[in-house]
Length: 316
Length: 110
Image (cartoon, rainbow over all chains, first blue to last red; front, side):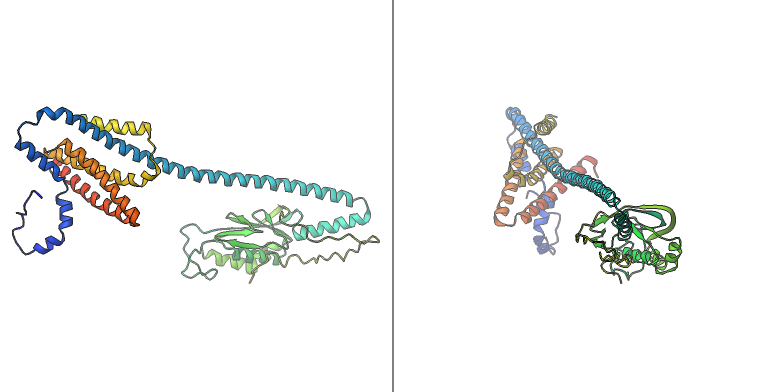
């Protein structure tokens, strides 16, 4: 320490200075002591000239080393960040690839299903009993959701509240903080109300609801038949003309109004012509060879009341 | 002048060659950089004070880097590597700040 503490003549704060000595040293003697000593030494011996050249080289070497270190650290950090980004983007690419493959398979499944249906209709059309059976099958398929349906109906649209959606403090639906979000429970209630209003077929975001469909949630996503939906949600329902007024006058309409209180926007509109696809999620579970004598139409078991159990799971 | 050329040369060489740092050396690189910055700021301050000495500068640079790396290495072996790195960064950071403040006072008289 070359500078004696002449600046503090009062002896009172002495022990406090001692306790702070580490920080004081750090802040006040931040310059390396060696410089002062070297300067003093040079002042003592008058001529340092002949070594000046060699020391210039030393300085350059040292600074090259400093620059090298800085650049290496920079390159290192950059390459590490780059590799993390690379891994991220490759993961994204894999996900997208899988999604594409999934879509392709789904398309192929749809094509195969249509061809099976066509073959079925063709073979059934050979006999009159078969034609009866075909008509019955068509009815059952449209009401269970395994056949495509076309007709007049209504469209209900629900969208999450914006990020600044303000609601009250307590959310009676979920009890959670994120209130402006449409939950699976909301969709279940609305779909049940649409069924109750007389709908014959319902699809949510293009996903046809069958008698076995479930509207669930995983995390924040709403799933229909275990396939995630993206908001906003669109309920399309084929049904009688009175459906919209029945729905709006019933619990469904008031439920939408309640949701509006949380910033969830919705709209209900009539539509002249809706095309609902067949559900992709139904597999054959039970089959029997019909009795050879004559097919009994009321034995195959399907009860017509498909509308009741559309959204399985927890409807209050 | 020649010093600036050396620094720029080192940076350019480092950027072009992009030398690969062995894995066992990688944890010490950030600490080494902080130590090197401390030496550089100290050197600049000494230069402005008129007492710069290149030998002192080079020796302080090398020893700063080595000691900082050694401390972190010891800490790693003892299981307190992150804490010791924090300590080294705090101490060197304070010195860098103090030196930068002195340089600022010299340059701008403020």
